[in-house]
Length: 440
Image 1 (cartoon, rainbow, N blue to C red):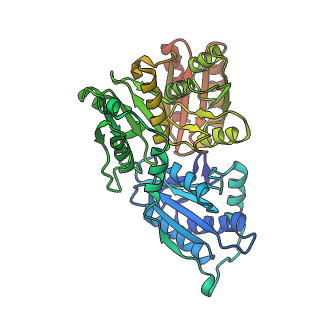
Image 2 (cartoon, rainbow, N blue to C red):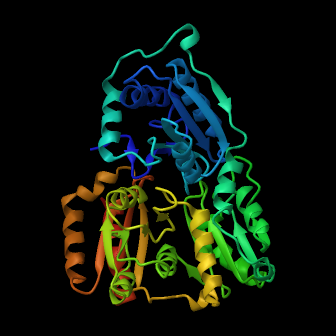
């Protein structure tokens, strides 16, 4: 069982174990041992970050350690997670690192790792890195002219922006008549997203595009869609889009202020091409599954986490996958979620259809109730009494819904999701389980 890595890299409160400078040093050494030390070729590592105030700490500590071991480092600056994945593969870097805690508050941070193909690491890779962190005492430092260099690549955000824009050629006579709201979550897309939407001809109201190091995700972005909804209605906008702090998630609001989540976006994207299979996670809504079934499309479910979707897509013929949270992966574009690209693709399809987003709600989701219970020890769900309560509640929903109780991979939370036909019954079940967890 992993001790450091969660569902999306290493994450925690900045400067508190496990996200400390010492662990960063040891992680860099472990990465070098596992991925980079097998030949004499000088290695290149790309490092990007979001707008958190602590990003500089981890950026420079990782860069220093890699350079001390003889690798060259390119600092990509403030850039979204998908850009690190795309640019690592495009320019032949040996490894990509994104410093971000995604949708978490600013006092958290994290480290996401990408191999030379731009893919997130497997569970097996992460377990091996943890073993090296805790047990390897090797010294991989070099001397004299073998020491690596760290350089800033100020053009990296522009290169990513150009890659995105090359995929879209909207009719500006059409986009010029549309008023939209763009919520950049004071994160990595704060400069890129407004620029691209304006460049494509949209009239935009740009929100939360002024990061100051401590306001990333603060009452904005995909974790607060009610803010986007309110802005769409207050500005009589045609629709709105919201991203998260590192730009790998997207949600859309239609002109009435109603939310389209990741599954709604997947349903829209599935209208283009000949999809026989779409990939989601065990959190997929039953209504979404039945909608795809009616269209002859198989829904494959992985464990929770977009990297498991990415891993499945890599080894299978499906091209499209995602989560309700707004992680959308289009394999033919990139091996990881790209909120900006996915949002633009959904908008492209909306414009092509001649309909509004409110007319592109393609299925009715089953009612669900979600609750996060904050805990000090996530293993509390292994308590026999709690396991029995969960088992009994699951039996109540048998054949007419589902119940998922799982520890968060990124926060000290137990996440409870109940789905079925009766909202009151679902609420009772969720409250019963959450009370048991709090009392344990």
